[in-house]
Length: 263
Image (cartoon, rainbow, N blue to C red; front, side, top):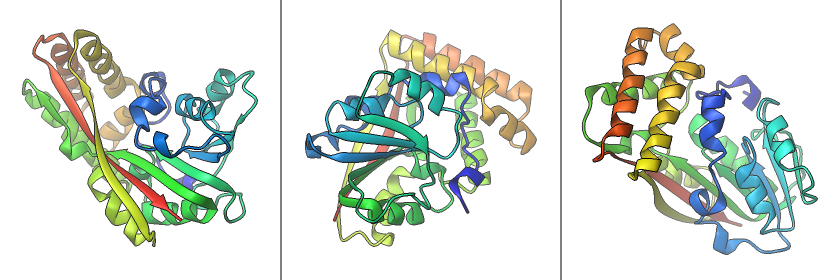
């Protein structure tokens, strides 16, 4: 299986990329930041729209960002215009176009959860790294929110069903250490971190992203075509996200598993 043949559950709709462009090293790769060196050559696997990639480029010598399809790369290249130490190209995490030990650091954020064989991907990432592999993924089953709403319970149930139908593992966070060990990593440091949304601004952004995404992204088609939900039900879920965002007591937390694999 090549990465380009797998199904990316979220797709690359504007409603998806709107959330991805908010990601930085500080909010998405803080566990890696202390281990970066100014001369490092770094590979960013599954770079998406490139915001983390560009942030990494400000901390190391050179960064290559890869995606299995072209869709998100045009925006990443536009964002990187004028930056001399970053490049974006097509790449397959199962068969990277690089000799052994080509990079000091290999990084992947929210990638392993979408793969049918995350262990094989980690083995390939280890192959091309000289020093360190870093990966961070969310755990959907561990997400928590308040106040309760059965429509948001259904959102989580539907999302997990769609992801499992694609052969992916949405509850990746809790499996990161096990996957690293299965990939043959001899030295693994696991950790955990959380995204949370509770201020009015955070709720408006996160709730708005999902109210839009559940109706306008690849998830919509996969949920309906796969028999996991009806369009009317998804419309009700979008309304539930808006209601949650408007609630002064609204709170949402996303647990992440992180791993540092040292050579």
